[in-house]
Length: 394
Image (cartoon, rainbow, N blue to C red; front, top):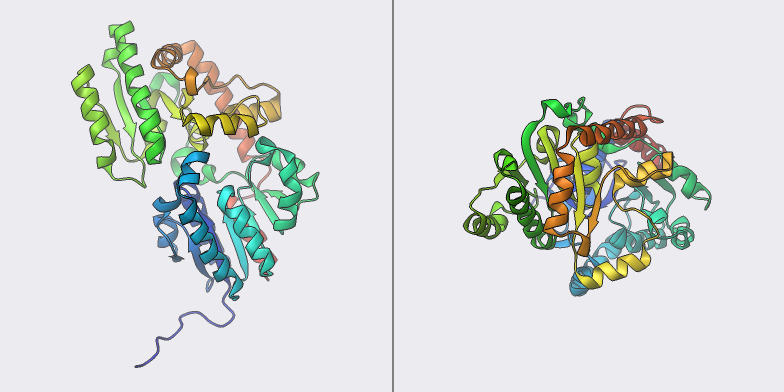
């Protein structure tokens, strides 16, 4: 039988790249595209989703299998993660890779970076672990694992450099999205629509969405004037639409109103008058799209207690963290977490956001965030990161 011809030249750069969630898949795909522009024959192996696959990734596991949040939830899947770490570590040890590119996803990627260093594979980390949240004691370990750290928040280079880590602010990849890059709609021009962003993972939807839906019912009970607001749920790109059916059918039976669905979450953020958004990158996306919102999050009691013990922050919404680190205040976005995230408290917070004066103050702060994430970088975050990686492997 005739052997298949290898389409790559012997000198083509081979990158091992790993993203573990939907946002990382998108950011990694843009980085891959930028690397291909600089190194046209380069190839990619690792872990990622559909966006990375379209850029040529040879993925060894479906993204949905590892897109899990929460300490207890991850612990339950420990055998699977252990096998996957062994597989990926063996691949790196087999040789032939010019660099390992972890994209966010620190729980897994920190362990894999150790395997890469043991195999003498250079590590260029894109979207740094948030050690300023988890404690600086991990910074010494990170220094031993990475060659270059490509950070996306403007205060991060100073934080990491104090530990001797080669850190570069490349800009934020969210600013590359055409919807986010466009000037946000003014509050007065937004639709009478409330957006729901419960998360992208099954357990997030199971814990967050019922509370969000009940809060809408509470708003309508408090005042009929909110009944004419359309309510739209942002669907996760990594889950089938049927994942939501039972909850939405129960909502209609119990409260008598329907929930619309939107597959393009950023367009929803760009047009909705206000929304409820689970903690994480989605809060920053909402801010950059100019949508007034309340941050909420519910997880298992064990995961919450463990995270509360570890996290060294006075605030957890990314817009608040950025404003606190750069401008010294953290009261931009209301935060309702765990037992505070009740239907009544969410309803009250949303009613406040529907006041034009409150919404305008929030969107003025969001404009400051847009400027903050655009400054200090020439070109796009992906392009800047790709240039640094290309120079590293030259």
